[in-house]
Image (cartoon, rainbow, N blue to C red; front, side, top):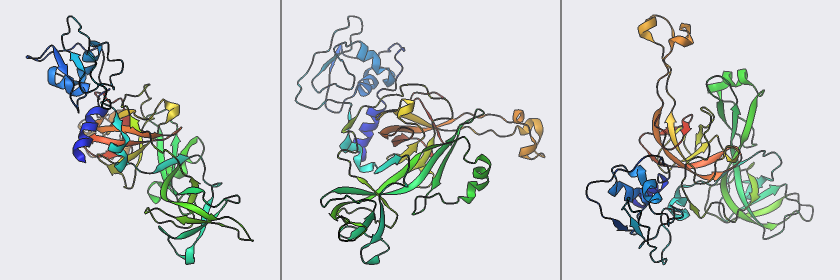
Length: 381
């Protein structure tokens, strides 16, 4: 499966090039090239130009390519830049190239979503035989669905994280991901307890509550005959369900059927777009891992948006000027040196909400960690 995904990575980087750069042809190249299965404009530019990110030059030289994501096996692409010979359409029996089909990435995606509140959602109040956990083929009892009817389908989800942001003028925003207990309430994180106390809730913006899908089930009985809970039969080989898990209607199509990678539609303020969390891990993720990001539709982000991820540069004290005998906190801010950010990898957005989005790490040279900065995929620093 990794080889097809590597081809997907090539497509994911397809639209990150800069349009204003003049093409440089390699030594021996034909005047035309016939597109083959698996080709992208990125591949073709890498083969016949000195730099593959100059693929827009090939696109501009072939005005009949209306959409660079839609080239087909059999298309004849002109590489004769002087006379601008147009592309000749090939047969249309096969699917267009360059789009990333859902089937190529779906095995790595997580059933995650973000909501503004969880307190008013229906919840699991009990389990069959008073179990501690329930799984496929077992019953769970749900409070908050008084009009539920047999046959209705629901996904069982668990509130896992509360995402917040503090807007700051100096340096950058503060992003937090607080773990939630079985009631959906924040747990005490002693690691940043004093930061939480100092920041407080004033000026803190709620980005949303993360819900992780545990299982799916069908209502078999509603609240009838004095019974105060609806009965749900779990019918998926998913995660175990516990008391406190919430219910939402099943989504008919949770993901787009295909993704067209593209750079962000607008420049984001430095420090605002950060990695909030890595799904199912602690702080680090690599290729095929899902990460939560602090930007969403209100920031112009949509499915297919590609970012590069960067470790934020450290600010060590200048020990040459101030010596090594002084403690770090006694050296003024002007005595610290801002080091460059360090590139980590690329991430493609596959699920977008208003203030949070989820992305799949497509490639990387080092792990992507919580707190890393998001930039244009073609950013040089």
